[in-house]
Every structure is written in structure tokens, then in C-alpha cells.
Length: 517
Image (cartoon, rainbow, N blue to C red; front, side, top):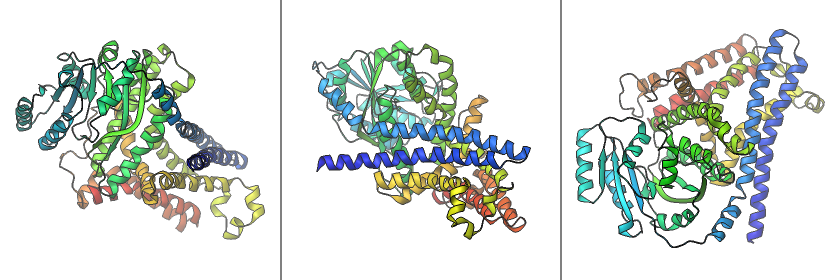
């Protein structure tokens, strides 16, 4: 029975891989069609533009297929590592650290007290609260709480270097051999965290062990975002771990102090975890990913919270890709390992900038003379026509790109609607991510604000929704207008519907802000 289930899982995985490969091949087929029918300079430029974007999309689809396929074998890889473990029984000293910045004091205190329930010898563990709070009442309350509960309280008045700066400041006072970091909103659900992970550190070249991160369940939006992140931790992290490139995810992990010192401290970037992972790999340290949840974080239940998270991620990833190309030659690694870092740095940019560029090229296609935009129902169902014209492949590829996340969500997370929400989120976040990439390239302030008044976003505020998503709304209205023009003036129903569809997807940012705040 177990073998049958394993075989079924493998067949599902192969089917999903085939879907990714089909997306890449179908895109190339449509590009070939554009070049075949090109009869003017305009059409050749259009074909070249679409070809460029299709090659990029094809690369990511093929790489996603490889990652997805390889992740299936991670359990065997980890089982092999576990069998080879010969733990000495030694208990190294551990610093358990919680970074805080103007957070809800009650939530911080609850989660810190829970961390103190961790099973480990009391004389070998020390707790630190590193507080960068600028709200005096919050700082005073957390200092009082720390002193009352035997927690080392470290406060900075100047928040230099982001979270990494706070960690580096704490390291000046800490002598513990291992560092365990938990975010303020993460509640420990498995007190065996240290006992389970420390045996791996008998390997002196091991820099860190990262566990799976997740959140508690929340509203529909929060659960869709949880699924959004779940793809990364269930598939991407496991596949990367096979190449020793599993990303340290900023918390719910255990780090060797010597590795931090060898790097020169945590790199002071907005996503210090990605830079730290790369630097430890560059210095030939090893890493392990454990696909097991030990602590659950606060669910992301508002669109604003998700937008801020994605802004920080893409700002940091854009910085990282430049950093990677600067230092890549000093790495002793395989091409596949380097590809892991390239796709990580370009990943959110691919999902945003390339998506917007595809939209703009689509506008040019709609106002071209492509035959498929004017075909009738009779043509569509004419088998000879379908067999001869490659443009049908393009339409199928577009539909498959919609169905891919929906199907995967249904298979692995038992939810079609959440899978569709993941598809919608990529459109609704495209502009925000693109702005973050531009801000990083221009070395602008990495902080994210919806509007100049800096008011706290709230759901069901129409004016706030319109103001804060004005760029997305302008793009949507432009697409709606062009779609209507295509239908009413050029009688191009297929092209008009294509642009209207894009317009609806980008307007999702306004709808989600209005619905969830």
C-alpha cells in the first residue's frame, strides 16, 4: 500500500513536471508562429520582444520542473543523513534570540516565555531580546519583562543595519556556540527544537540547520498566502538542499557561531538571511534543511502586510543578484548550485517585471494583424486549422499557465480556490515588486509606505484603496480602455477579451486592499 502511494505521488510529480515543460515548449511554438507570419518591421520587432520574454519564461519553467522533480527525492537524502548521524551527546551552549521592533509587547512576551519552555540544560542556554523599538513605552515594558524573567535585554537607539545590525550588536555580548533565532510572532509548538537539531552540528563544516516555516491558520486570504509560501518550503527548499543551497530563512533555524564569525557577522542588508546563506556557502560551509515545523508565526491576514513583505523580499533579492555576480567567481560550486542563486535573485523579478512586460507586448499583439485574433468559432473547431496553425498553442499555453498553480494547489494543498488566489496574487503584487526592484537599483530607502500620510491601512475604505493602489488601478483602466477599443472599433473580440482579462487581474490589488486592508 505504501509503495502504491509512493508510485502515485511520483506519477503526479511527473505529470506536474510535464506541465511545466509544456508551458516552455508551447511558448516557443507561439514565438515560431510570430516569426513565420511576420511581414513587416513592426511584426519582426514584436516577434523578437515576445521571443526574449518567452526564453526567460521558458528558462524559469524548465528550472521549476527540475526543482519540483528533484524535491521528490529529498526525504531519501535526509534519511541517509540521519542514518549516518553519530551524535557525541555533547551539549554546546546556545543563545536563543528574539529580534523586536515596535511590536505588540503582549505577543512578544507570550512567545518569549514559550521559548523558555524549550527542552535543554538550563546552564547551557541563554535568552536574548534584542530590541530596536523607538516607542519608549514598548521598550520600557520589554526591558521590565526581560529583567523579571532572566532574559538579556539589548536595546539600540540607532537602528543601523536593519535586523542584521541588531544581531551583530548582540553578538558582541554573546559567547554561545550556537545561535537560535525566532521572530517575535513565532510561537514554539515543539519544545524538542534544540534536542532534534544539535546532533547535526557534530559535522564541523555545518553552518546552519533551517526548519520549515509556517503560520497559524487565519482568514481565507491568510491561508492563501500560507499556501503561497508553502510552495517555497515544500518544494524549492528541499530541492535546493540537495545542492547545499537551502536558504537560511531568518528564523526557526540554528546557526554555528564560528560560521557567523568567519563571514564577519550577518551581512547588513534587508534580507540578511539570503546574503548569510550565500556567504556561508562561498566559504564551503554546509547546510541542512529539515522539512518539519517547530514554530508557527502570525498569519498574514491583510494585503498591506503581504505587500510590505514582498517589497522587502524583492528589494533584497534585487540587491542580492548584483552581489552574487560580483562574488560568484570566488565560489567552488557546480553550475546547478549557481543556478539556484540566480533563480532566487531573479525569481520575484521574473514574477513581476516579466509579467508586466508580457502585458505590454500583449497590447502590441492585440493591435497587430495576427490571424488568430480574428478567427471564428468554425475556425477554432476546424481540425485542419488547429493542426496547421501554431497560434493555438499560444492560447493553450496561456490557459495552462492559469491552471498550473490551481492544479498543484488542489493536488498538494486540497484547495482549488487558494490555488487561484496564488495566481491572482502574482498579478496584484507585480507593480509593488517592480517598484521595489527599481528602488533597489536606484539605492533608494528600502522602507515601504502606501501613502505619504502614512495612515494605518484599514479594510473597506474605498478612498484609501484607490489612493494606495493608484498605479495598479491606472494600469488596469488603461487595459480596460484598450480592450474596449479593440472590440468596439476594430471588432477584435478575442484581443479585447485578452486585454480585459489582464485588466481584471491587475485591478485585484485594489480589490484585495479594499477587502482585507
